[in-house]
Length: 174
Image (tube, rainbow, N blue to C red; front, side):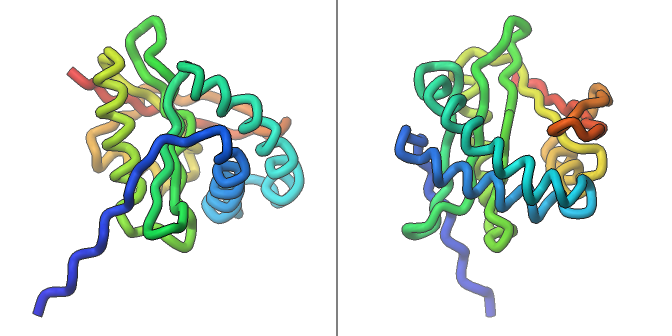
């Protein structure tokens, strides 16, 4: 007997009214994903304090043409989002955020959001896409590599003054 097919998440463009929703998804996802990879102080104090202000600044710019933010919903609940910047001078769109609610992972949300961002990037004239992922985030590394993304660089970065190592991943769209 086969199991019934899971419903695919519905995707919609974010609106100005989604700032709190995006912030909540972002904070919850980072806390679950990065616990043990970065300090508890960052996850519990520094990042949540800065996240809302960051989204209040970034979302209006994205909606004004700097990129695209899409939200995944299952029924009437938001379960993930993607934030992608418009192609840069090299023709590469930057995936700034791709998050699924920790209690909703495994539903195809990340795949649906990444595919939608890829379609948008192509339609925007991008020849490629890139992103950064913490070197310690094995699940994300596996997710991107299984979809054809390749590591092209390793950079030392700082999150709220804390040293982290990020891997830069890229994929060609041509």
